[in-house]
Length: 492
Image (cartoon, rainbow, N blue to C red; front, side):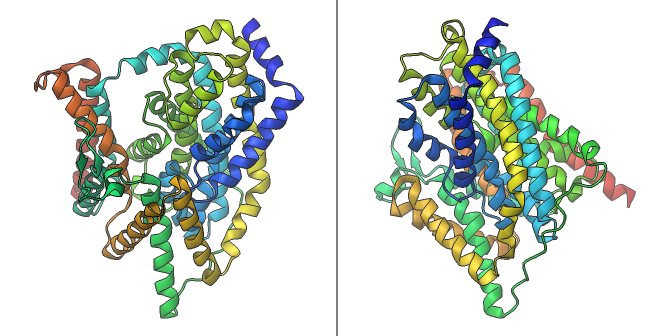
Protein backbone atom coordinates (compact mmCIF):
# COMPACT_ATOMS: atom_id res chain seq x y z
CA UNK A 1 0.00 0.00 0.00
CA UNK A 2 2.88 2.37 0.77
CA UNK A 3 4.15 1.89 -2.80
CA UNK A 4 0.76 2.85 -4.21
CA UNK A 5 0.67 5.93 -1.98
CA UNK A 6 4.11 6.91 -3.24
CA UNK A 7 2.88 6.59 -6.83
CA UNK A 8 -0.27 8.60 -6.15
CA UNK A 9 1.70 11.38 -4.45
CA UNK A 10 4.20 11.51 -7.31
CA UNK A 11 1.52 11.84 -10.00
CA UNK A 12 -1.11 14.02 -8.32
CA UNK A 13 0.87 17.22 -8.61
CA UNK A 14 0.46 20.09 -11.03
CA UNK A 15 3.46 19.33 -13.26
CA UNK A 16 2.83 15.60 -13.90
CA UNK A 17 -0.90 16.12 -14.50
CA UNK A 18 -0.22 19.03 -16.86
CA UNK A 19 2.35 16.97 -18.77
CA UNK A 20 -0.16 14.14 -19.18
CA UNK A 21 -2.56 16.65 -20.73
CA UNK A 22 0.16 18.02 -23.02
CA UNK A 23 1.31 14.53 -23.98
CA UNK A 24 -2.18 13.32 -24.91
CA UNK A 25 -2.75 16.49 -26.96
CA UNK A 26 0.50 16.01 -28.87
CA UNK A 27 -0.29 12.33 -29.36
CA UNK A 28 -3.71 13.12 -30.84
CA UNK A 29 -2.15 15.41 -33.43
CA UNK A 30 0.69 13.06 -34.30
CA UNK A 31 -1.43 9.92 -34.47
CA UNK A 32 -3.98 11.54 -36.77
CA UNK A 33 -1.32 12.27 -39.41
CA UNK A 34 -0.45 9.21 -41.54
CA UNK A 35 3.17 8.19 -41.09
CA UNK A 36 3.91 10.19 -37.95
CA UNK A 37 3.95 7.31 -35.49
CA UNK A 38 3.92 7.16 -31.70
CA UNK A 39 7.51 5.88 -31.79
CA UNK A 40 8.66 8.89 -33.77
CA UNK A 41 6.93 11.44 -31.55
CA UNK A 42 8.18 9.83 -28.32
CA UNK A 43 11.72 9.69 -29.71
CA UNK A 44 11.65 13.34 -30.82
CA UNK A 45 10.40 14.59 -27.45
CA UNK A 46 12.61 12.31 -25.35
CA UNK A 47 15.39 14.93 -24.90
CA UNK A 48 12.86 17.35 -23.38
CA UNK A 49 12.40 14.93 -20.47
CA UNK A 50 16.08 14.91 -19.50
CA UNK A 51 15.69 18.12 -17.49
CA UNK A 52 12.58 16.79 -15.74
CA UNK A 53 12.31 14.45 -12.79
CA UNK A 54 11.65 10.81 -13.80
CA UNK A 55 7.92 10.76 -12.98
CA UNK A 56 6.90 13.97 -14.83
CA UNK A 57 9.07 12.99 -17.81
CA UNK A 58 7.41 9.58 -18.05
CA UNK A 59 3.96 11.19 -17.80
CA UNK A 60 4.70 13.28 -20.91
CA UNK A 61 5.92 10.29 -22.90
CA UNK A 62 3.10 7.99 -21.78
CA UNK A 63 0.55 10.65 -22.72
CA UNK A 64 2.00 10.82 -26.23
CA UNK A 65 2.07 7.01 -26.44
CA UNK A 66 -1.59 6.54 -25.53
CA UNK A 67 -2.88 9.54 -27.47
CA UNK A 68 -1.10 8.63 -30.69
CA UNK A 69 -2.27 5.01 -30.69
CA UNK A 70 -5.91 6.07 -30.32
CA UNK A 71 -5.66 8.90 -32.85
CA UNK A 72 -4.42 6.55 -35.55
CA UNK A 73 -8.00 5.32 -35.81
CA UNK A 74 -9.33 8.73 -36.87
CA UNK A 75 -7.95 8.78 -40.45
CA UNK A 76 -8.38 4.99 -40.59
CA UNK A 77 -12.13 5.40 -40.14
CA UNK A 78 -12.62 8.59 -42.13
CA UNK A 79 -10.31 8.26 -45.13
CA UNK A 80 -8.96 4.67 -45.02
CA UNK A 81 -5.44 5.84 -44.13
CA UNK A 82 -4.24 4.47 -40.75
CA UNK A 83 -2.44 7.09 -38.71
CA UNK A 84 -0.40 4.39 -36.97
CA UNK A 85 0.43 0.81 -38.02
CA UNK A 86 -1.76 -0.71 -35.31
CA UNK A 87 -4.81 1.12 -36.72
CA UNK A 88 -4.70 -1.02 -39.88
CA UNK A 89 -7.19 -3.51 -38.41
CA UNK A 90 -9.58 -0.66 -37.57
CA UNK A 91 -9.98 0.05 -41.28
CA UNK A 92 -11.64 -3.32 -41.89
CA UNK A 93 -14.94 -2.23 -40.34
CA UNK A 94 -14.33 1.42 -39.49
CA UNK A 95 -14.08 2.68 -43.07
CA UNK A 96 -17.14 0.70 -44.27
CA UNK A 97 -19.11 2.27 -41.41
CA UNK A 98 -17.95 5.68 -42.59
CA UNK A 99 -19.05 4.95 -46.17
CA UNK A 100 -22.45 3.91 -44.82
CA UNK A 101 -22.99 7.27 -43.12
CA UNK A 102 -22.05 5.95 -39.67
CA UNK A 103 -18.73 7.74 -39.20
CA UNK A 104 -19.93 9.37 -35.97
CA UNK A 105 -20.81 6.00 -34.47
CA UNK A 106 -17.48 4.49 -35.52
CA UNK A 107 -15.50 7.39 -34.03
CA UNK A 108 -17.39 7.15 -30.75
CA UNK A 109 -16.81 3.39 -30.52
CA UNK A 110 -13.15 3.96 -31.30
CA UNK A 111 -12.49 6.41 -28.48
CA UNK A 112 -14.53 4.45 -25.91
CA UNK A 113 -12.92 1.11 -26.84
CA UNK A 114 -9.46 2.69 -26.87
CA UNK A 115 -9.92 4.13 -23.38
CA UNK A 116 -11.41 0.91 -21.99
CA UNK A 117 -8.67 -1.19 -23.60
CA UNK A 118 -5.97 1.06 -22.17
CA UNK A 119 -7.50 1.04 -18.68
CA UNK A 120 -7.95 -2.75 -18.68
CA UNK A 121 -4.36 -3.12 -19.85
CA UNK A 122 -3.06 -0.90 -17.03
CA UNK A 123 -5.04 -2.86 -14.42
CA UNK A 124 -3.63 -6.13 -15.76
CA UNK A 125 -0.13 -4.62 -15.80
CA UNK A 126 -0.39 -3.52 -12.17
CA UNK A 127 -1.79 -6.88 -11.08
CA UNK A 128 0.17 -9.47 -13.03
CA UNK A 129 3.35 -7.77 -14.25
CA UNK A 130 5.98 -10.04 -12.59
CA UNK A 131 4.10 -13.25 -13.41
CA UNK A 132 3.56 -12.30 -17.06
CA UNK A 133 7.18 -11.21 -17.43
CA UNK A 134 8.27 -14.74 -16.50
CA UNK A 135 5.81 -16.08 -19.09
CA UNK A 136 7.29 -13.80 -21.75
CA UNK A 137 10.79 -15.09 -20.94
CA UNK A 138 9.59 -18.61 -21.73
CA UNK A 139 9.12 -17.58 -25.37
CA UNK A 140 12.04 -18.63 -27.51
CA UNK A 141 12.41 -19.04 -31.29
CA UNK A 142 10.03 -22.03 -31.45
CA UNK A 143 7.31 -20.22 -29.50
CA UNK A 144 7.61 -17.09 -31.62
CA UNK A 145 7.40 -19.11 -34.82
CA UNK A 146 4.21 -20.88 -33.76
CA UNK A 147 2.72 -17.61 -32.52
CA UNK A 148 3.42 -16.13 -35.95
CA UNK A 149 1.83 -19.11 -37.69
CA UNK A 150 -1.22 -18.70 -35.47
CA UNK A 151 -1.37 -15.02 -36.40
CA UNK A 152 -1.18 -15.95 -40.08
CA UNK A 153 -4.42 -17.94 -39.73
CA UNK A 154 -6.11 -14.54 -39.57
CA UNK A 155 -5.63 -14.43 -43.34
CA UNK A 156 -8.07 -17.29 -43.83
CA UNK A 157 -10.67 -15.51 -41.72
CA UNK A 158 -10.24 -12.17 -43.48
CA UNK A 159 -10.42 -13.81 -46.92
CA UNK A 160 -13.80 -15.49 -46.48
CA UNK A 161 -15.42 -15.89 -49.88
CA UNK A 162 -12.15 -15.22 -51.72
CA UNK A 163 -9.70 -17.54 -50.01
CA UNK A 164 -7.41 -18.02 -53.01
CA UNK A 165 -7.00 -14.29 -53.53
CA UNK A 166 -6.43 -13.82 -49.81
CA UNK A 167 -3.71 -16.47 -49.76
CA UNK A 168 -2.04 -14.88 -52.79
CA UNK A 169 -2.13 -11.51 -51.04
CA UNK A 170 -0.69 -12.98 -47.83
CA UNK A 171 2.04 -14.80 -49.75
CA UNK A 172 2.99 -11.54 -51.47
CA UNK A 173 3.31 -9.91 -48.05
CA UNK A 174 5.60 -12.70 -46.89
CA UNK A 175 7.77 -12.23 -50.00
CA UNK A 176 8.03 -8.49 -49.40
CA UNK A 177 9.07 -9.21 -45.81
CA UNK A 178 12.12 -11.16 -47.04
CA UNK A 179 13.62 -8.11 -48.79
CA UNK A 180 16.64 -6.81 -46.90
CA UNK A 181 19.27 -8.33 -44.64
CA UNK A 182 19.00 -12.03 -43.86
CA UNK A 183 18.25 -12.28 -40.10
CA UNK A 184 20.59 -15.24 -39.54
CA UNK A 185 23.48 -14.93 -41.99
CA UNK A 186 23.31 -11.16 -42.48
CA UNK A 187 23.60 -11.03 -46.27
CA UNK A 188 21.33 -8.89 -48.48
CA UNK A 189 18.40 -10.63 -50.18
CA UNK A 190 16.46 -9.44 -53.22
CA UNK A 191 18.36 -6.16 -53.15
CA UNK A 192 19.49 -6.35 -56.82
CA UNK A 193 22.60 -4.41 -55.88
CA UNK A 194 20.62 -1.53 -54.38
CA UNK A 195 21.79 -0.45 -50.90
CA UNK A 196 18.33 0.98 -50.30
CA UNK A 197 16.63 -2.38 -50.86
CA UNK A 198 19.42 -4.07 -48.92
CA UNK A 199 18.43 -2.05 -45.87
CA UNK A 200 14.90 -3.46 -46.09
CA UNK A 201 11.48 -2.05 -46.90
CA UNK A 202 9.98 0.36 -44.38
CA UNK A 203 6.71 -1.19 -43.23
CA UNK A 204 4.95 2.07 -42.42
CA UNK A 205 5.62 3.41 -45.93
CA UNK A 206 3.98 0.25 -47.32
CA UNK A 207 1.02 0.74 -45.01
CA UNK A 208 0.48 4.36 -46.04
CA UNK A 209 0.63 3.42 -49.70
CA UNK A 210 -1.60 0.35 -49.54
CA UNK A 211 -4.41 2.15 -47.77
CA UNK A 212 -4.15 5.93 -48.09
CA UNK A 213 -2.60 6.32 -51.55
CA UNK A 214 -4.56 3.42 -53.08
CA UNK A 215 -7.83 4.92 -51.88
CA UNK A 216 -6.79 8.36 -53.18
CA UNK A 217 -6.06 6.89 -56.62
CA UNK A 218 -9.45 5.19 -56.60
CA UNK A 219 -11.17 8.46 -55.77
CA UNK A 220 -9.21 10.32 -58.47
CA UNK A 221 -10.41 7.77 -61.00
CA UNK A 222 -13.99 8.40 -59.96
CA UNK A 223 -13.44 12.14 -60.25
CA UNK A 224 -12.03 11.76 -63.76
CA UNK A 225 -15.08 9.76 -64.77
CA UNK A 226 -17.35 12.31 -63.19
CA UNK A 227 -18.76 9.67 -60.84
CA UNK A 228 -17.09 10.60 -57.57
CA UNK A 229 -19.23 9.76 -54.58
CA UNK A 230 -20.59 12.52 -52.39
CA UNK A 231 -19.07 12.63 -48.97
CA UNK A 232 -21.32 10.41 -46.86
CA UNK A 233 -23.15 11.94 -43.92
CA UNK A 234 -21.65 11.65 -40.47
CA UNK A 235 -24.67 10.07 -38.86
CA UNK A 236 -25.31 10.05 -35.14
CA UNK A 237 -22.48 10.17 -32.64
CA UNK A 238 -24.57 8.22 -30.13
CA UNK A 239 -24.41 4.46 -29.84
CA UNK A 240 -28.10 3.84 -29.29
CA UNK A 241 -29.72 1.58 -26.72
CA UNK A 242 -28.17 -1.75 -25.90
CA UNK A 243 -24.67 -0.80 -27.07
CA UNK A 244 -23.13 -1.70 -23.70
CA UNK A 245 -24.49 -5.24 -23.91
CA UNK A 246 -23.44 -5.63 -27.56
CA UNK A 247 -19.91 -4.28 -27.32
CA UNK A 248 -18.77 -4.99 -23.74
CA UNK A 249 -17.83 -8.66 -24.26
CA UNK A 250 -15.89 -7.80 -27.42
CA UNK A 251 -14.10 -4.84 -25.83
CA UNK A 252 -13.12 -6.63 -22.62
CA UNK A 253 -12.09 -9.88 -24.33
CA UNK A 254 -10.05 -8.08 -26.98
CA UNK A 255 -8.38 -5.96 -24.30
CA UNK A 256 -7.09 -9.11 -22.62
CA UNK A 257 -5.89 -10.53 -25.95
CA UNK A 258 -4.15 -7.27 -26.87
CA UNK A 259 -2.46 -7.08 -23.48
CA UNK A 260 -1.18 -10.67 -23.63
CA UNK A 261 0.17 -10.21 -27.16
CA UNK A 262 1.80 -6.94 -26.11
CA UNK A 263 3.62 -8.70 -23.27
CA UNK A 264 5.63 -10.71 -25.81
CA UNK A 265 8.68 -8.65 -26.86
CA UNK A 266 8.66 -7.64 -30.52
CA UNK A 267 4.94 -8.08 -31.18
CA UNK A 268 2.87 -5.03 -30.26
CA UNK A 269 -0.50 -3.55 -31.15
CA UNK A 270 -0.43 -4.25 -34.87
CA UNK A 271 -0.33 -8.03 -34.35
CA UNK A 272 -2.55 -7.85 -31.25
CA UNK A 273 -5.30 -5.91 -33.02
CA UNK A 274 -5.48 -8.37 -35.93
CA UNK A 275 -5.48 -11.41 -33.62
CA UNK A 276 -8.21 -9.89 -31.43
CA UNK A 277 -10.25 -8.95 -34.50
CA UNK A 278 -10.00 -12.48 -35.83
CA UNK A 279 -10.94 -14.14 -32.53
CA UNK A 280 -13.90 -11.78 -32.13
CA UNK A 281 -15.11 -12.65 -35.59
CA UNK A 282 -14.63 -16.35 -35.04
CA UNK A 283 -16.66 -16.52 -31.84
CA UNK A 284 -19.36 -13.95 -32.67
CA UNK A 285 -22.79 -14.54 -34.03
CA UNK A 286 -23.31 -12.92 -37.41
CA UNK A 287 -19.59 -13.16 -38.19
CA UNK A 288 -20.29 -12.61 -41.88
CA UNK A 289 -21.03 -8.94 -41.15
CA UNK A 290 -17.41 -8.37 -40.19
CA UNK A 291 -15.56 -6.38 -42.83
CA UNK A 292 -18.79 -4.70 -43.92
CA UNK A 293 -19.23 -2.21 -41.11
CA UNK A 294 -19.69 -4.24 -37.93
CA UNK A 295 -19.15 -2.07 -34.81
CA UNK A 296 -17.66 -5.08 -33.00
CA UNK A 297 -14.77 -5.04 -35.47
CA UNK A 298 -13.86 -1.47 -34.53
CA UNK A 299 -14.21 -2.20 -30.81
CA UNK A 300 -12.04 -5.33 -31.04
CA UNK A 301 -9.23 -3.68 -33.00
CA UNK A 302 -9.08 -0.50 -30.91
CA UNK A 303 -9.35 -2.10 -27.47
CA UNK A 304 -6.62 -4.65 -28.29
CA UNK A 305 -4.44 -1.97 -29.86
CA UNK A 306 -4.46 0.23 -26.76
CA UNK A 307 -4.29 -2.62 -24.24
CA UNK A 308 -1.06 -3.73 -25.90
CA UNK A 309 0.66 -0.56 -24.67
CA UNK A 310 0.45 -1.70 -21.06
CA UNK A 311 1.44 -5.20 -22.14
CA UNK A 312 4.62 -3.84 -23.72
CA UNK A 313 5.53 -2.12 -20.43
CA UNK A 314 5.42 -5.44 -18.52
CA UNK A 315 8.79 -6.88 -19.65
CA UNK A 316 10.25 -3.37 -19.68
CA UNK A 317 9.53 -2.65 -16.02
CA UNK A 318 10.10 -6.13 -14.60
CA UNK A 319 13.00 -7.37 -16.72
CA UNK A 320 14.43 -4.34 -18.50
CA UNK A 321 13.47 -5.91 -21.84
CA UNK A 322 11.56 -3.62 -24.25
CA UNK A 323 8.21 -4.97 -25.38
CA UNK A 324 8.09 -2.73 -28.45
CA UNK A 325 9.93 0.20 -29.99
CA UNK A 326 8.29 2.80 -27.74
CA UNK A 327 9.11 0.91 -24.55
CA UNK A 328 12.72 0.72 -25.77
CA UNK A 329 12.76 4.52 -25.85
CA UNK A 330 11.14 4.64 -22.42
CA UNK A 331 14.02 2.53 -21.07
CA UNK A 332 16.31 5.30 -22.28
CA UNK A 333 14.19 7.88 -20.47
CA UNK A 334 14.57 5.91 -17.23
CA UNK A 335 18.28 5.06 -17.49
CA UNK A 336 19.26 8.67 -18.21
CA UNK A 337 18.32 9.38 -14.58
CA UNK A 338 20.65 6.67 -13.31
CA UNK A 339 17.88 4.09 -12.84
CA UNK A 340 17.80 0.60 -14.30
CA UNK A 341 14.51 -1.10 -15.30
CA UNK A 342 14.13 -4.49 -13.66
CA UNK A 343 13.06 -6.07 -10.37
CA UNK A 344 15.18 -3.64 -8.37
CA UNK A 345 13.15 -0.74 -9.74
CA UNK A 346 10.08 -1.90 -7.78
CA UNK A 347 11.96 -1.68 -4.48
CA UNK A 348 14.39 1.16 -5.24
CA UNK A 349 11.97 3.56 -6.99
CA UNK A 350 8.40 2.58 -6.12
CA UNK A 351 7.24 6.15 -6.75
CA UNK A 352 8.28 5.78 -10.41
CA UNK A 353 6.88 2.27 -10.99
CA UNK A 354 3.56 2.87 -9.28
CA UNK A 355 3.50 6.40 -10.65
CA UNK A 356 3.62 4.85 -14.14
CA UNK A 357 0.65 2.64 -13.22
CA UNK A 358 -1.35 5.58 -11.88
CA UNK A 359 -0.27 7.99 -14.62
CA UNK A 360 -1.07 5.60 -17.46
CA UNK A 361 -4.52 5.03 -15.95
CA UNK A 362 -5.09 8.80 -15.83
CA UNK A 363 -3.79 9.09 -19.39
CA UNK A 364 -6.65 6.95 -20.69
CA UNK A 365 -9.22 8.82 -18.60
CA UNK A 366 -7.94 12.09 -20.11
CA UNK A 367 -7.95 10.44 -23.54
CA UNK A 368 -11.61 9.48 -23.14
CA UNK A 369 -12.61 13.01 -22.15
CA UNK A 370 -10.56 14.73 -24.87
CA UNK A 371 -11.57 12.19 -27.50
CA UNK A 372 -15.28 12.58 -26.84
CA UNK A 373 -14.95 16.37 -26.60
CA UNK A 374 -13.13 16.59 -29.94
CA UNK A 375 -14.95 13.88 -31.84
CA UNK A 376 -17.13 16.31 -33.81
CA UNK A 377 -14.01 18.24 -34.78
CA UNK A 378 -12.29 15.11 -36.17
CA UNK A 379 -15.45 14.28 -38.12
CA UNK A 380 -15.30 17.54 -40.06
CA UNK A 381 -12.85 15.81 -42.37
CA UNK A 382 -15.94 14.18 -43.90
CA UNK A 383 -17.25 17.58 -44.96
CA UNK A 384 -14.18 18.46 -47.04
CA UNK A 385 -15.01 18.17 -50.77
CA UNK A 386 -13.46 15.15 -52.45
CA UNK A 387 -11.42 17.25 -54.89
CA UNK A 388 -9.63 18.89 -51.93
CA UNK A 389 -9.55 16.00 -49.48
CA UNK A 390 -7.63 13.40 -51.49
CA UNK A 391 -4.86 15.71 -52.78
CA UNK A 392 -4.35 16.64 -49.13
CA UNK A 393 -4.15 12.94 -48.22
CA UNK A 394 -1.48 12.45 -50.89
CA UNK A 395 0.56 15.38 -49.59
CA UNK A 396 0.36 14.12 -46.00
CA UNK A 397 1.30 10.63 -47.19
CA UNK A 398 4.44 11.96 -48.87
CA UNK A 399 5.37 14.01 -45.78
CA UNK A 400 4.69 11.10 -43.42
CA UNK A 401 6.65 8.54 -45.42
CA UNK A 402 9.62 10.90 -45.84
CA UNK A 403 9.63 11.78 -42.14
CA UNK A 404 10.13 8.13 -41.19
CA UNK A 405 13.85 8.14 -41.93
CA UNK A 406 14.28 11.38 -43.92
CA UNK A 407 14.84 9.08 -46.88
CA UNK A 408 13.36 9.79 -50.35
CA UNK A 409 13.42 6.05 -51.04
CA UNK A 410 10.60 5.58 -48.51
CA UNK A 411 8.47 7.94 -50.60
CA UNK A 412 9.10 5.75 -53.65
CA UNK A 413 8.13 2.67 -51.60
CA UNK A 414 4.94 4.42 -50.53
CA UNK A 415 4.06 5.31 -54.14
CA UNK A 416 4.80 1.76 -55.36
CA UNK A 417 2.68 0.31 -52.55
CA UNK A 418 -0.11 2.73 -53.46
CA UNK A 419 -0.11 1.60 -57.09
CA UNK A 420 -0.03 -2.04 -55.97
CA UNK A 421 -2.91 -1.43 -53.57
CA UNK A 422 -4.91 0.32 -56.30
CA UNK A 423 -4.64 -2.64 -58.66
CA UNK A 424 -5.40 -5.05 -55.81
CA UNK A 425 -8.62 -3.17 -55.12
CA UNK A 426 -9.48 -3.22 -58.81
CA UNK A 427 -8.83 -6.97 -58.98
CA UNK A 428 -10.74 -7.82 -55.81
CA UNK A 429 -7.68 -8.89 -53.82
CA UNK A 430 -7.94 -8.14 -50.06
CA UNK A 431 -5.17 -5.86 -48.83
CA UNK A 432 -5.24 -6.87 -45.14
CA UNK A 433 -3.61 -10.32 -45.69
CA UNK A 434 -0.65 -8.62 -47.38
CA UNK A 435 -0.23 -6.35 -44.36
CA UNK A 436 -0.35 -9.34 -41.99
CA UNK A 437 2.25 -11.13 -44.09
CA UNK A 438 4.61 -8.16 -43.93
CA UNK A 439 4.16 -7.82 -40.15
CA UNK A 440 4.43 -11.48 -39.19
CA UNK A 441 6.85 -12.70 -41.87
CA UNK A 442 10.13 -11.60 -40.24
CA UNK A 443 9.12 -13.00 -36.83
CA UNK A 444 8.08 -16.34 -38.36
CA UNK A 445 11.22 -16.72 -40.48
CA UNK A 446 13.64 -15.82 -37.72
CA UNK A 447 11.85 -18.02 -35.19
CA UNK A 448 11.72 -21.08 -37.47
CA UNK A 449 15.33 -20.90 -38.59
CA UNK A 450 16.67 -20.33 -35.07
CA UNK A 451 14.55 -23.17 -33.70
CA UNK A 452 15.89 -25.53 -36.37
CA UNK A 453 19.49 -24.48 -35.67
CA UNK A 454 19.11 -24.95 -31.90
CA UNK A 455 17.55 -28.41 -32.40
CA UNK A 456 20.04 -29.53 -35.09
CA UNK A 457 17.42 -29.67 -37.82
CA UNK A 458 14.92 -31.69 -35.77
CA UNK A 459 11.23 -30.78 -35.41
CA UNK A 460 11.10 -32.02 -31.83
CA UNK A 461 10.53 -28.46 -30.65
CA UNK A 462 6.93 -28.80 -31.89
CA UNK A 463 6.29 -31.06 -28.89
CA UNK A 464 7.34 -28.42 -26.36
CA UNK A 465 4.20 -27.39 -24.40
CA UNK A 466 3.77 -23.79 -25.62
CA UNK A 467 4.47 -24.51 -29.34
CA UNK A 468 2.23 -27.59 -29.10
CA UNK A 469 -0.66 -25.58 -27.66
CA UNK A 470 -0.21 -22.92 -30.35
CA UNK A 471 -0.12 -25.65 -33.02
CA UNK A 472 -3.44 -27.03 -31.76
CA UNK A 473 -4.94 -23.54 -31.74
CA UNK A 474 -3.69 -22.97 -35.28
CA UNK A 475 -5.26 -26.18 -36.55
CA UNK A 476 -8.53 -25.31 -34.77
CA UNK A 477 -8.43 -21.82 -36.29
CA UNK A 478 -8.30 -23.34 -39.76
CA UNK A 479 -10.75 -26.21 -39.22
CA UNK A 480 -13.55 -24.37 -37.39
CA UNK A 481 -14.27 -21.87 -40.23
CA UNK A 482 -14.33 -24.75 -42.74
CA UNK A 483 -16.83 -26.67 -40.59
CA UNK A 484 -19.00 -23.58 -40.23
CA UNK A 485 -18.97 -23.00 -43.97
CA UNK A 486 -19.90 -26.63 -44.62
CA UNK A 487 -22.72 -26.42 -42.09
CA UNK A 488 -24.13 -23.28 -43.71
CA UNK A 489 -23.97 -24.96 -47.10
CA UNK A 490 -25.83 -27.99 -45.72
CA UNK A 491 -28.54 -25.79 -44.19
CA UNK A 492 -29.20 -24.22 -47.55
